[in-house]
Image (cartoon, rainbow, N blue to C red):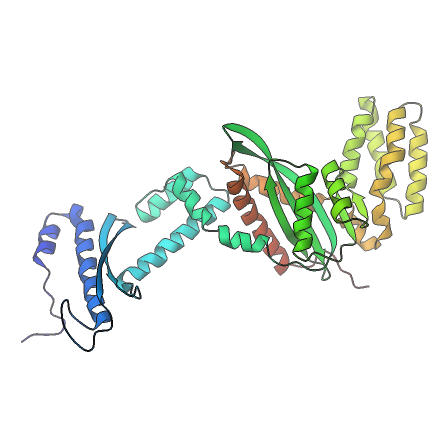
Length: 385
């Protein structure tokens, strides 16, 4: 009597198993090949060379595939059909696992885990290690998602923060500083978004102008104030692309710039306190009066500083034309500086990027993650009375 669950192992498989665990990969491959061929016959509704009216397709040979597993590399022959509308369910789970592993590798890369550690982790989990090239290829699979995020349509943003940082990139056998331009916007709901990022081996006006133009082309509108440092490339690009929009020079950077005009070390703390008093004035008129007093105070002891105070400090007072409740968060680019620190924390592990594309990929992934967190968190500012 024969039962449906009776099963006889093929002779070659018995020989493999009898030789010990070293033959497990070959044994598993044989089983998978048998299962896949049987599944193809079921899909075709016909055995090999069988003539039947029930047939829905035709066999079309095999495609070699290597599967990484805890028992080693398994080489299988995946059955094909002419229409291409068949993939064995025996391997589907393995394909999903492979995709999950690639995403995990990419996520580890984005989180700043070194290639050596990624390799050690995957070897412990999967029985196989990965090379730096494999890590890079896994990360590259994020490119389409990141590109779509960078090019997404924008809308109305009242405040626009701009800044740049630098990463080391190899170019033509030399190591160069690559400018990473970042823009943050605050929308009508008071929430922040990373509006865009651009990577180039220059922070000159052309790069900034093209970057700002790309934001406008994507629909950026309604900007009432631009906040940045006094980099000439930013200022010239803002005039060209965002002409007529008020500009607020970062007060933190202004205080730092003032120190280069202080003639003696023992004067620096006093100068910093005087400048803070200007920025902490209750209104614009009081701030202007403070500037006159501070400039007069240093007219004799530090004439270059006095001249700089009269000419430059006014650039940090534009914020007084906006709601008092917003001033603390819009008078500096400190929020963007914190984002740059997070970028640096992730990129420090890489040290040196092989090209601009790899730098853009990693920075985009970090910024996309930050921006999504902001969208699900509380508002940065409120525009309601």
